[in-house]
Length: 88
Figure 1 (cartoon, rainbow, N blue to C red):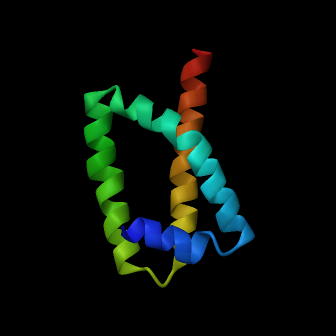
Figure 2 (figure 1 turned 90 degrees about the vertical axis):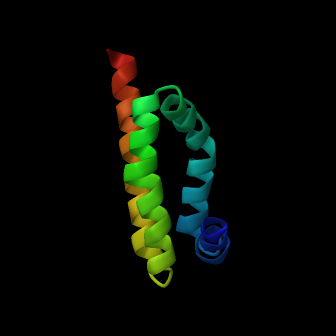
């Protein structure tokens, strides 16, 4: 719920945030399927990414740019790993 609130309050209210949400909604399902297909990756992402981001968003809700940059970086890393795996 706090992530939806963050999206609606901060991201959907500016062009950069709207672009990020659009990219996320386009690419996240593919990334989520890849993560979900591997138990080790799934546990690592949950413990090392999801839980800290949830805490981070709750703690620094007044710093939307920092959260946006963190999420964008994580999405870019996931996308680049996926593209790299295709080339092999």
